[in-house]
Amino acid sequence: MNILLTGGTGYIASHTAVVLIKEGHKVVLFDNLANSDISVLDRLEKILNKKISFIEGDVLDSELLSKTLKEHKIDAVIHFAGLKAVGESVENPLHYYENNVGGSISLIKAMQKNGIKKIVFSSSCTVYGEPQYLPLDESHPTNPINPYGFTKLFAENILHDLSISDPTWSIAVLRYFNPVGAHESGLIGESPKGIPNNLMPFIAKVATGELKSLKVFGNDYKTRDGTCERDYIHVMDLAEGHLAGLNFLEDHKGWYAINLGTGQSTTVLELLQAFEKINHVKIPYEIVGRRKGDAPACYAKPSYANKILDWKTKRSIELMCESSWKWESSHSI
Ligand code: NAD
Ligand code: UD1
Image (tube, rainbow, N blue to C red):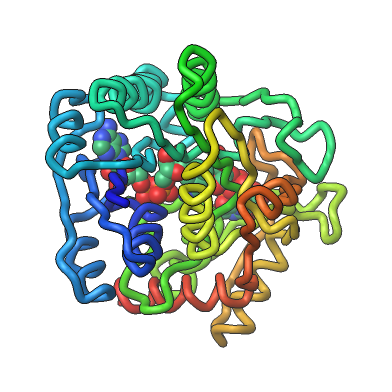
């Protein structure tokens, strides 16, 4: 298949590109480089030993998208492009709605114009909001607690309404839990701009010495060790989940919301200790107050994905920590 990856030079898309190309698909990356670097392209070409098509552009530019879809004879799209910083979405909600919701509409219109009706959408477990029960299954009510979460839910709903108005669309909405880790080569990985908000990239930067110590946000939760539990998923498992999603859409029409997680929960301290042990490094930390909006625990029931996508995560927490460190230590020291 010819597959367009919007947000193609980003963290999750670049790893997915590796999996898709290795499987024999032709991939076109489309990105405005708002949160990624063009050097990702060289690195991907090194991993794959192949030239990769890249178009610098904004998903809000429906004309350019339409031209790209036509010229590259695209069969399916994976829509990764989006802004994802929760705090920034609270400060600048309009920008987030315009980019994430407006961008999705612009893409869908371009696809419609070209008769392309197969799409995988990057959604998030954040659409569930504060868990009412655990593990989270796909029937859990959706109730985002910040503008970023709403942009994901609105885009999901737009795709849902579209599938009702035109049942010939094939749509997989993938709700990721906490993607971490990097490709085994250490050539691509997550590189947030500025000080990371998220746990794994923060730990990795403490390990390099770039940041002094980790602030653990609260140890008074009702969890195993008092710190928050999350469902960390290796980005390569996630990438394989996209391939499985595309395969599923080959012979399924309609709209499907699917959790991509491991079903295992790991606390902040457990992740920190796993990172120290596997990488033989010390991560200084201090316990500080809770972060506003954090749920004590959040993890998936992944059985729907296991069943309908015939997909399962394979990689351990240790491998997530090892690959994150390999990536961080090779590009920042
Ligand atoms: P990322 O920032 O590394 O990748 C997103 C890419 O989209 C970036 O390269 C950015 O430049 C590009 N982009 C943003 N707006 C664009 C626009 N208007 N036009 C063209 N390109 C644009 O983030 P990621 O972690 O790879 O996330 C990919 C997707 O998965 C996002 O939609 C994100 O919301 C979603 N998601 C991520 C996580 C996570 O924790 N990483 C969790 C759940 C869902
Ligand atoms: C983040 C996103 C959420 C997204 C989810 C999945 C935020 C605020 N939320 O949530 O929208 O859907 O990832 O990828 O970015 N922690 C520390 N110290 C730190 C950083 C984090 O103790 O410096 C703790 C947090 O309190 C949390 C855990 O580590 O308990 C994981 O945090 P993070 O990596 O930010 O992920 P989420 O909060 O799950």
